[in-house]
Image (spheres, rainbow, N blue to C red):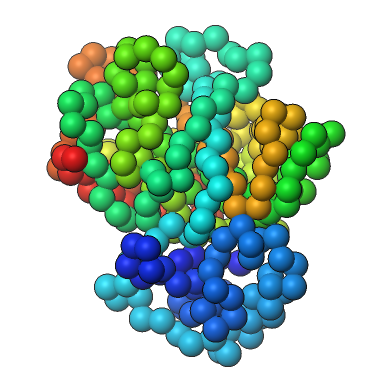
Length: 286
């Protein structure tokens, strides 16, 4: 299923994109797309039954209708740094022996076509297309990568916007360069795990002002999705509605020759993970 949330920011309602590409209203079936829904087998079954007979759901006119983040009430966003061989190579970094972790606050999340704000004082705002993993079952001390995959509810396209000076040159942890307002566009859809045959075979692409910058595949991940979920479950409890951003392939501004083409107000970024939908953001000054 392709689940999404539509409407003005803070007042989104649940929806479904059916097999024919028609947008359908789910608000008569479930109150929202969130961790409570993903953890509730009976509620998900109602949604699946409705998806199999989409005519029972009211159609929505997408014209002028904002698409919000596909997941509400996100618990936490755990991010994996340097998780692609080619990205580590372009930045001159050693291949990590264990996953590098940092966090993004849930309030960084915006819709896939919402404005991204370049922070005040920023000189090095960068792009990163990523596969986002959404947890559907509570995960503690998992024993295998296969168990990790079994705890995944679905997948989405994410944009891990980053300010490299704040992240790397200002001391402390990476978090200050990752948590600026609007720095995590998510969506358009939450695609349920049963529709993604292999999360390690998904192409990812990103364009800036129409120029292709990133063209990678999740097959290049150092730590694949199942292993990431297993690993994290030994350091924290993962709950339904938690999100994991799983890293970015080569092609970021930081990895390019001087002068590095960092983002500025007026730029347009488009990105996609194949099968999970496309994003488009116009950048403005904060």
